[in-house]
Image (cartoon, rainbow, N blue to C red; front, side, top):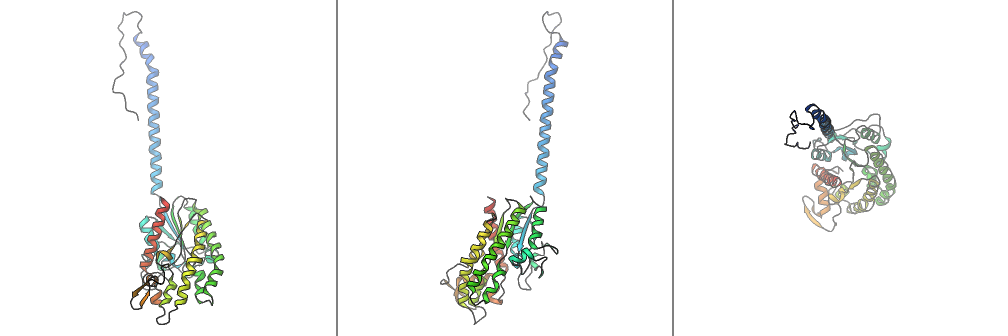
Length: 329
């Protein structure tokens, strides 16, 4: 509100008997319109101030409303690890939720494929323990349908979406006579399904919600040392080509089509480090640095298990956060 003039407006006193001067009653009547104008102006300013205050209150209420982080996908989205590793703080979703202060809604389902996300009703096998703090059940819907329904219901209050899917579409290729050809033949379906899933999520969430897809650590690099004494260095080497030249590029294009981005977890976990670069790792002796990183971040070298350790999930969570912050700038 403008500052008031410190000078007082004092009506001139007209002495009786001075001819030609306005009489006091007429002079006061002449001032009435001016006072009425000032009063109306003051009321208008008060009204504008009240309107601004009400708008500020509404904005504060909207900003304090619950905001959600949606995670979709397979056992990596769940944060699954071999028992008896504790679950609720083990997955990357917990790392992201804590750092962003977003409320986790985890639709992840262990064993999910790009096709099951679109066609399978409910989640079987059951959720892993990592999603226990934010798991969302959907017994009568597919994972994608349940997630998009949630997005529409909470539109305007979604802070982030991540998707980890596709690994189970190509896992069987490790046992195929020609693993590279197997991965290559799976790529059209993976690309088509992921692009469709990402597009449905984008439509339901709106154009500005950060959408981040994830790939995986190259766990098959662990075949260099697992099983002990019977490793398969040839298949471990082929896995690098499968991730770097086939699988990850297909995912990148699929998410990009929906205005999303891919976090290349394979790169983040050291999977592209040239295999000629060596290090020493107990109890295996001299191994490629990329293999040592896989052993440190996943359970494959020890147990033949494809899931990340807590250190691996934490690294993934930090990579997501880095991408998320760059998208928010």
